[in-house]
Image (cartoon, rainbow, N blue to C red):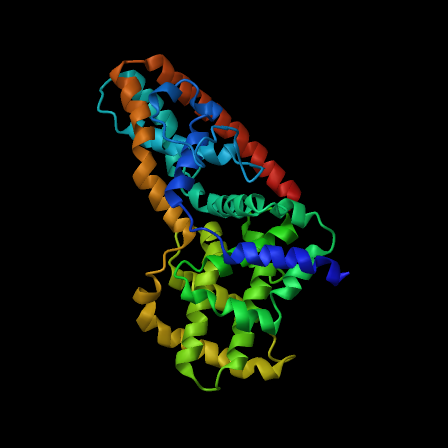
Length: 364
């Protein structure tokens, strides 16, 4: 059966090796374009500045990324910028103070928050991969995930010694580490049938990207000359960078050094040295490396996670479009549009929050 997947593997590998660089500005524009069309903002949409869609010409404003409903995330994102601006209006009127008081709890408690941007990065990357696959006439991630048996085949292939030595180890020569990060995302996607991770998936030792990255670290360490601290440090740094996609998209504003430590702490927790005493030297070597690398944290953090790049790019390039939505409506004294937005936002927030909480508890 595995031979049936060899051609698919070769095509997928070729695509992953030749991925174009990520446009974080493009991702920010894509999210902004669609979020602006969220139903929460119907009354203010004409006041919210727009931008060119991404990819160029794609004016589809459905509330999805990579086929997943992200309308709730778009709502939380846009409402945060609008609310922050509304709260800053310098007005002594009872009307504005009353509405601001209604909005205040939603800004204190993280219901309205731009933090959702970091979680959207994995779906943006999945769309980036699918665009490449489609251009070459190859199956999408979902089509691959629905191909019975291919997930296990792929996950096993990326943990083989030949793959790790010949491919996974060469990725650091490209500064964005796109190959390794994308390979790990594909592994999780094939298993979960989505690019989105939650905290439970992130912390699972059975998560495919965790198992694969651990294999990359262990096999590489075994191949080096024992006692080579410099080489061990390089292994830890490169694996830590590859881990940023998962940890930073779920846990939020983490530095690369933080993500590195989260990953290796999970590795140490997952390994039972009583059952596998032969792995003790490996763990001791990793622990020693982590201590040494404290002095290099600033250098390691020069690599900024994709999630953080998306967050900062959106914040810098798109936030004024949202703030202008409130400013422009206020300038025209269109209190009806503002009141409609506040009332709709509060109602939908409470409804969606309760609905999502119940749905989430049912899934878990």
